[in-house]
Amino acid sequence: MSAGHDHSHAGHHHHDHAPKLDHLNTAFIVGILLNSIFIVVEVIAGLTTHSLSLLTDAGHNLSDVASLALALLAFKLTKVSANSKYTYGYKRSTIIVSFFNALILFVAVGFILYEAVVRFLNPEVVSGGTMAWVAFIGIAINGFTAWLFVKDKDKDLNVKGAYLHMAVDAIVSFGVVISGLIIYFTKIYWIDSVVSVIIGIVILRGTWSLLKDSLRLEMDGVPAEMDLEKIKAELMKGKGVVDVHHMHVWALSTTENALTAHLVIKPEAMAEFDNIKHDLRHRLEHLDINHSTFEPEFADEKCKQLECL
Image (tube, rainbow, N blue to C red; front, top):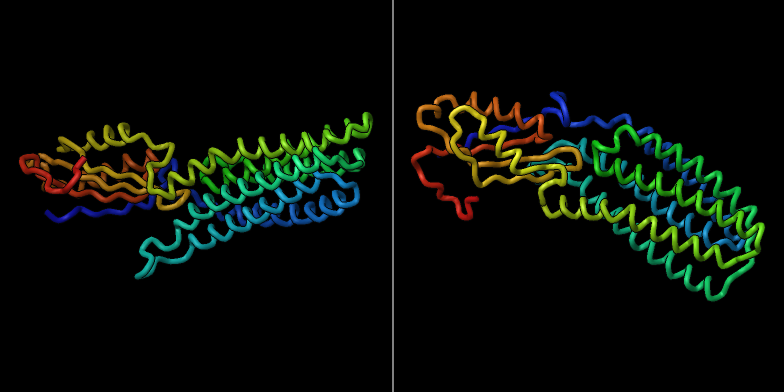
C-alpha cells in the first residue's frame, strides 16, 4: 500500500513554527566581538604578567569565539532552500557544528592540562593583581554574553552550548580572580597552575553533555528529550489505530525532529486516513516532532518490512 506522507512544519513547543532564532544573530555577533576584544586583552596581560591562567583562558575564549562563529554560520545555512542534492537543505549543519565545537573544547582542555603540568614543574613569577583585574573584566563580558543566550538555551543545542561556554567562562574568570588575589597576597605562584587544572576540569564537565547529545544526533539517535513510549502512546490514540511499529525518531537539526512510523489501521477506518494523519500530526506537535511520515497498513495484513519493530 502506498505511504501516507505528510510533513508537519509546526512549532517547537506550541503550534507555531519550529523555534525562530533569527534574533540570536545579534547575540552571536555581539558575543563574538566582545570576546575577541577580551582575548586580545588577556593575551597581552598574560604575556606581560607571565600568567598561564590568563593565557589558557584566552585560548579557551578563542575556541569559544570560533564556536560562536560556527554556530552563527550553521544558523545561516539552515536558511538555504532544499535542492535536488540536499532535500532537507543544510539543516543538519547545526548538528555537525555542535559536535565539532565539543571536539574543539576537548582539544583545548588537553593543551591546558599539558601546559599546567609544565608550569607547575617550572613555576614563574606572575602579577597576581593584574591577573585579578583582567579576570574581573572577563566575568563581566562572559556573564553578559551568557545572558544574551539564557532565554533560548533550551530551544537549540548550539544555543545551549554557547550559553554553557559563556557561563562556564564567567565561573573560570572568577577562579582566576581568586588565584590572582592569593598570588598577590601570598606569592604562592604554583597556584596559577592549579587554577589552570581546575579550569580544564570545569570545561570538561561543561562539555561532556554537549558532546554526548551532539554525537547522539549525529548518529541519528533519538533526541535526548524524546520518549518513544510516550510518542507511541500518543499515536495509538488516533482513530482506528490498533498498532504502531517500525517507528523511527531522529533530529533533522538542533531545532527540528522527524518521525516515520507504520500505522496499523482498522479496515473500516482506512477511508478516513487523511483525517487520522491530521489528528496525529497535531498530537506530535506537542511532542516537538515537526516532520512526520506515516505508512498505513490494514489490521489483517502482515508487515513485510524487515526488522519491523
